[in-house]
Length: 278
Image (cartoon, rainbow, N blue to C red; front, side):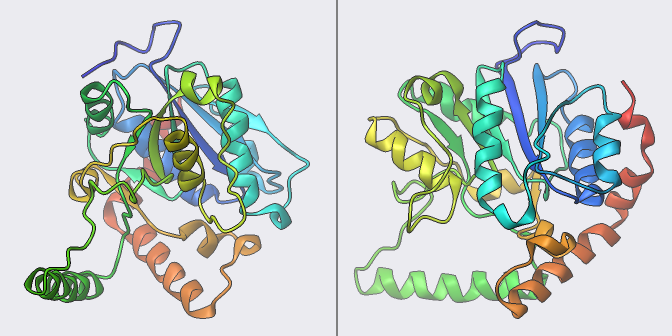
């Protein structure tokens, strides 16, 4: 895998994570990232969007991250301030690659970065890499989706109608954990801020890259899930200022967040204070 020890002056990858008052989630995110990135030439940038609680003091205490504080931001600017946080991080990043991450993403195994770099190496025209939608779901719901989805796919094949797979150009690296060639984003002055009708920074940046003639290879979701967990909307579940528009979606997000925070491996990370040390 491409990369060297973290003692090099220029990091291979800059990981950028927006934050607002989700200290419990962020603690798991950052500790899991540090635990499973030993030996990677990486810098971690956290962009705080105006936190007013003790989570900001904790972030300030971490000497191994670069903290960018934006005290002028408020929950009223969410989710746009997530995208502008990545834009700010991109301008200040030093890595050859720029990796966007959400604070509700957790690394579970070493080697998690390898698929991203592999896809970049395969295609000299690739400007981004990542996977499609990845969620921490109730096992029954996940099973239902596989069964129903498999049945629908079979019917489509039977009648000659083929659905999209992970290689389809309509699928782009989702911004919860996506890798970009920083120099290309800077060269074309690209932004993660969506245009009207778009809902994600990942689609916004992919659309701009496609228009510039670049590719954005997507690797299989199952490969991402071997080492990365994304608890969809977990930050909205624990940050009262970032609540979802639909009560049912909010309840589901809260249940996902609760299951995660009560899991044994997360509890273990919560006790691993040594991971905060320089």
